[in-house]
Image (cartoon, rainbow, N blue to C red; front, side):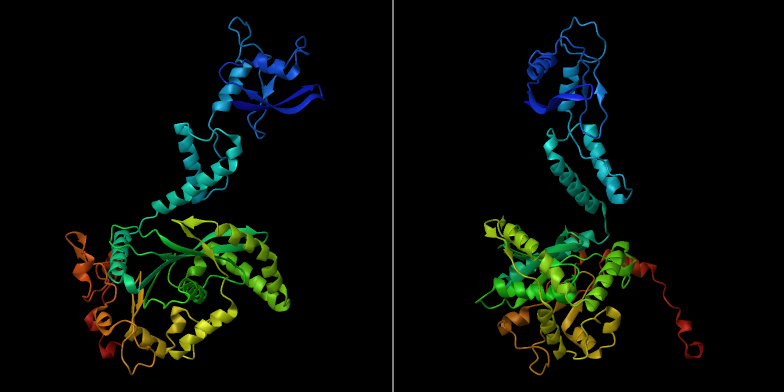
Length: 453
């Protein structure tokens, strides 16, 4: 069954206002439709029929063709046939007019659907059409992006999963990401998802099961920073393991978006939002109540989002929501780092600024392992250490515990986890590292002579 929105006018006078009429695409003729609307009152009039598929299109004159009989002498298409043909055409979202790489991909997807003659048959699905194509464009855009380190990272992730399985009774594996941005007037709320993954018994098991925590935070006065994320992780851990002992091994699995090192300001979107936020922060210093009033203005929306989110489930595990970290929470967590270096400042933690803190550098050298795609910390188990508390693992288990190894090339592309675990590895097999080394130019030995320096 199809439906038409029909209105009858005589000159400028509306005889019959808009009404919805049902159409049987098999048996009805246009004359039946006309009689149903007019009740036979205007069959002696000269009738002109216009149709359009949607408001953005122009009206199409159908040349008074009211009969579906084959003996008609009038030329041109039958009105009812055109109406039914148009009603059967699949509907697709409008193409984007602004030119950028995402919109170009969005339009290409629509063109592909048009060529395949697929789409939606119900005009009420306008929002669904746009959302579907938009999400498909985003995923396709991600698939288009290639990296020489893709297989290396896949091997590293497999190592991580096997590492989790080996120590599953002492392990907590968390995946985290800032997800959807939700505009609220001039403000934006961003959702942070923290996923406590239930570790399966073997590598073929699913890692897509566990407890999901979601929080909605204001991007103006609660921006995403490393110390804020750390505080929120700890809050989620305390909720997850309430009245329980925290696991001694913790892994955070997150994603990163790179510009050149220390050049994130070159990202145009980041520069725009940074300038806007700076302006708001300056106003907040001038107008003390601005921050509290802004947070209060979105509190109701956050509560609605929390209520709807907590109705969701992942394999019978209900989602949980909690509040974002306060300034006091963040300050308390940051001050715990003072045990390593009391001169650190919360707003001065970049790589360049870190170089001025020798005690912190010493701690990283002796307790950490930094790689392009991982950063690991392990207690030294030295009783004289000023930083490490006693280990919670049994001595034998702790002694056998090694850092996650770097993927090593082998005839099977990358060596298996058990072949390299417990051995000393480096990033020398990482493709982009190999390329960077090949491009580097070695300094001739005769240059490094004291007289030439």
